[in-house]
Image 1 (cartoon, one colour):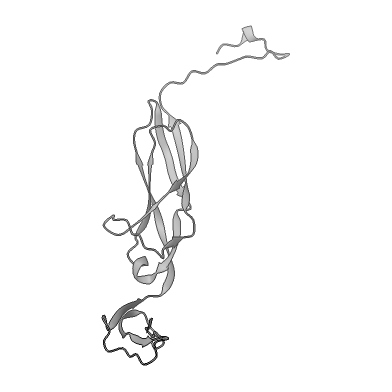
Image 2 (cartoon, rainbow, N blue to C red; image 1 turned 90 degrees about the vertical axis):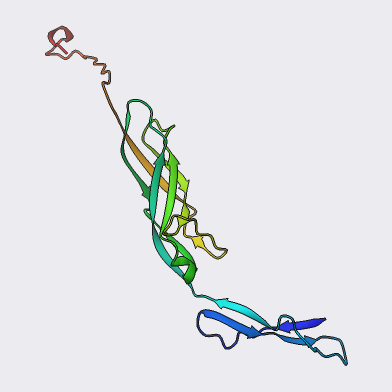
Length: 166
């Protein structure tokens, strides 16, 4: 067998490095290496860091008749993402897309997000991780139009129901 070694001992800063490959025969007495292909390897070194990105919510679909959106917001409204600095610099927001077609009352639900760059493309990387895999979406509604009101009068010692007009 041939043992291949690339030494990273002299790397002290992030960057791209072209390093030579050392090759040594193992257990093959009287054997030497005459050529290596490839002779070098490219190593990319980056710092691990973290950053906070805002959560943006996009609602799709339509609410049912008589319902109106009062307010909606994510909680938390920012996500902490950890990973290589060069990748973190690309991330501009965490985006949630939620269909409100089936929403009929105030609600809170757990929703997943995608990490997006400035142009709206998803940013994926093996070493990216978020402090939470999801965020809570809070939706508050108002009802539009006339609502029936049922009034039930309860007698008191001073007023009887026939004495009150509603």
